[in-house]
Image (tube, rainbow, N blue to C red; front, side, top):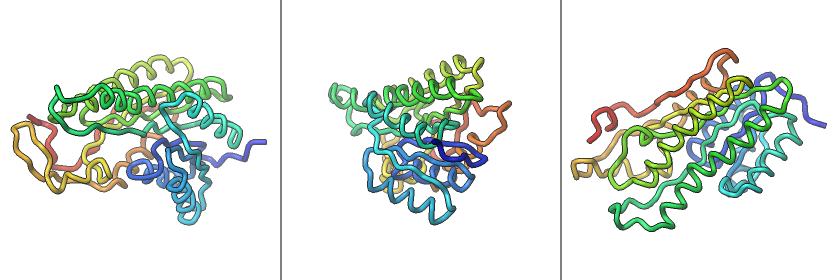
Length: 256
């Protein structure tokens, strides 16, 4: 039998073991959600679950998941439904980048890996969430896709990442349209320079469009987590279609 639900519902967070995913999972737990933690490595997920329980008395279920594998994603949602009975929010956060090299030096394997994680993995998770939200009673729910400022404006030597994030924008709009009649909303959060493993080099210096290397400002992941909670907890008759949260002063407006 499914556990009783807290008032805020059930949220799945992919890439929940570190960085933005970890901070968002903890913030959602603090907001009253039961949180399902998806990620490749079990130990970090267990640590986040323990932190949610100790800090907020929250319920967090770690489910090791490879978002690029259809069977693994299905197992994630099966375990979620078996434990909690429904899915109210998916924060589709898992992502990766490729080594920064000149465009003609990219390998097919590098290109494919980024697309597999950032776009196909996001599709697989969103599709499973959509199916769950469509079948449950009452129907409906929220899907929040992690885009990027690169979904609008690229960095140098970032073709796989930039292409994948442009794809995320198209996927987000398609899900939003297809979910209208079912009460399933979909929005995108575009993040710039939140402190994480992917932005570790920003304070030391990042390649700019003019060929220079300059340090860039960053922001704490907790700022992103607060934005995710805001998107997740709006009333059912409101949705954030797109939101950009970034470090003030980072190159974006006028980048290049």
